[in-house]
Length: 271
Image 1 (cartoon, rainbow, N blue to C red):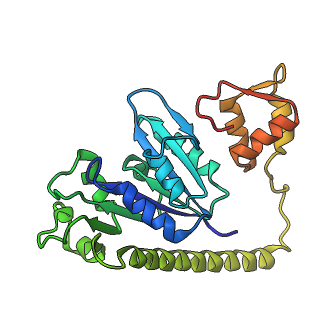
Image 2 (tube, rainbow, N blue to C red):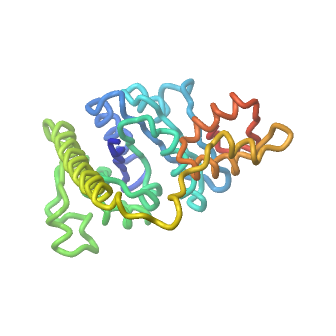
């Protein structure tokens, strides 16, 4: 199975151009990619698809840019780890995901991190100082400064590994796409090599007898029926069954519908 690619886009501050970068990437990557927009809140958490959102909203811009599916996460930092995992699961049908926002980078293991500076390269919010250190690619709204602000607290070796772009540069996003596709190709080749090695190892050891059979994931339908009460099951428990059985959340939701089971207390919109 092909590994899903995750690209995270962080930025120096609100309005620095993260959505613009995400739009341009999605146009080049095609409609098989999904997108996640993160907005920090003080208390409540939600994960929503909002196809009827106003045209000027970031989620609408990402959809018009060509994203096959778009989710809007609203959440405080606390609890975001579980929420971002749920959202990624909901986009498991996509070839890859473009994630916009600083905080998700702290909890994901993205293949590529892009950091966007605003016109004032000296303006960085606290979370941006942590994220810029993780960046594989740094994009500027104006020409790249001779004294690079992204290297404020970094060593020379790190500076050598980071790719810098001026967003006004001709073919900037085509070059970005080339870097991303090269990274995906290398990742897929590496994964194929690992799978081939695993298959050879299994064949070589298939004759070895073990004391007990290998445990496999439980049947999701049986698990739902085992935990149902009055034809209802809490969202948290349904998510746990999805993780245990390796089934995406939306598939668990469909299965619950087929079994006439109602998923209750669903605050995140997973089902």
